[in-house]
Length: 397
Image (cartoon, rainbow, N blue to C red; front, side, top):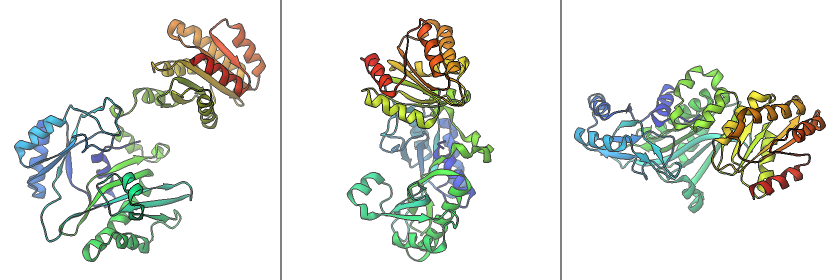
């Protein structure tokens, strides 16, 4: 579950991470009021207006601008609110901006020049340890930094049973070439950041940039936070942070009925029971010359109602040219699945206009094939993986 920048910053602040202060606004008037409040509480006279969407690269698309007066806050916020913001991480049509974060200006003059760093916390699945990835080159595309100057990318792996040790926090500050007050501030910042990562059951924290201000403070100027959906039962309050308008509506609908669905860009719909089999089925589609249009795991139950719901979700994608149903009957009997497919097909009438290939293996697979073949519907049954692949290939051609 992705959070907006302002939500991520509020979460970080609750764990003692120093942040760039700001107030979210949904209208121009709210943005002006927020700017006035920040001026009175922080003393800032300039404000940064940031579009709040679930995508990076907002600045490149015109979604982050500096306002040097209250009048400019109104004009800048008015221009950003309601715009279709297009960035390298949005769909081609962009995303509509429904709210902005009015933030304090932290690039103020002082004794030293501000410096920008990159810091992220994530799980290294290869080692089974958490990892802090960091660089002196903040504010830039970290992928470009890694490609052009890999020696400027540092990593620190943390044993989850021990947590971040003090010497590791100091090592990070040292590699970022900090000293004095900034060195101490960075060790505190990194420690609080890691505690927030663990405490919130996050799967990713990305802070770009982390700023060393001209008076040696270390603060998070941005915050990309992704929470682990599987841990939400431990944090019931986090569910209120979900912004459904930023999520794929079909995925939201699938989640509401207990289906695991991920929208993709292909032309062959998938309906499978089990995540592992779903991944293998997607490989099968690729091998057959097609592209998977979705990941859909119907789970251990596949009655007519559930199959019909899955059909309707898949068919909301106009690019789907065929549907491959690949079920292994272990817990669920294949004949029940087959009957569910036939019943769902009949219930939907003319809504299904694409060929359907069904591969059922396992308990009562032979009975299931007989049910499919005798249905008289535009449903093709298959036994072997290769047979299913051949029929998918023929269907999309």
